[in-house]
Length: 360
Image 1 (cartoon, rainbow, N blue to C red):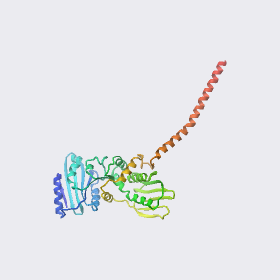
Image 2 (cartoon, rainbow, N blue to C red):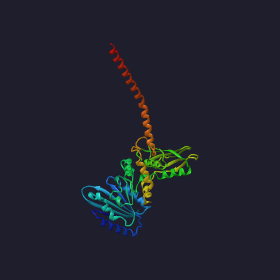
Image 3 (cartoon, rainbow, N blue to C red):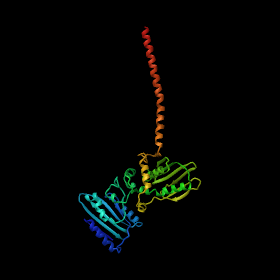
Image 4 (cartoon, rainbow, N blue to C red):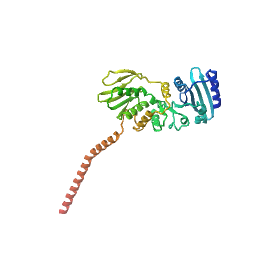
């Protein structure tokens, strides 16, 4: 059932939700949370609604889609969808003019009482999620760096402004990669010397995977650039051989552990709906994500931009600087000695000339 409201108010929207629920024959929906989706006029609303609807099949919820349209005229239009294949409730809010700049005043009266609130920015997100008026009312704040125009810059902002409850779908995309790598170390307990992550240039997930390996293993991690799709390989080097996962087609990966035959494992690139459903399973802060973005923040700013970038473990950067200083000193020493010899020769010549003049 779809109810369309034009130039409306939040009390009218609440009344429309109750009427639509009764008309659908489901006065009690059993919803577990409120999912707020924040979008701008130029972003794909239908795609975000489809992903949220699929995720709501696992987590029945009230979905509030807040779309800021801009313009001079201040007005609120709404569309209430209940039943007809829509799990839970969905309210599409078109906020025009100044109303789009104060979305919290529209969204807050429509939240489910006594239940968690999750705010999701599928595309462009504010720099400080926790300081945003919608982020302040949320238990979890979800972004997607890969939905931004500049994924690596967006991920950097997430790292610089992290607050407990923040997460990013770029992190969720590497859950299976992290599980396989951790399982390999459980099967083959060897000291990892170095690691390498290869992926397409603007893969925020690859940078997070490299930062995770660096922070957990305390080894240098090299970030290599490939044609993709997504992450194409992750390799950990040990004295006995490499532990590697190689995925060239985005679906099936080759899993290699020293002393064991190669295995093929399903490692498909998951849709956004599946990623969102995974994040909705937890309402507590993700401590490992916090540690990873902290490690990412301590890495060089150009990580993932050049063709091969090495992220160094703590304590190695100072050693590299000392080595560079020694090389510079060694190169400059011969030049200094040559200059000293020339100066001495000039002085000797000057003394001889003065002695001749005196004799004459």
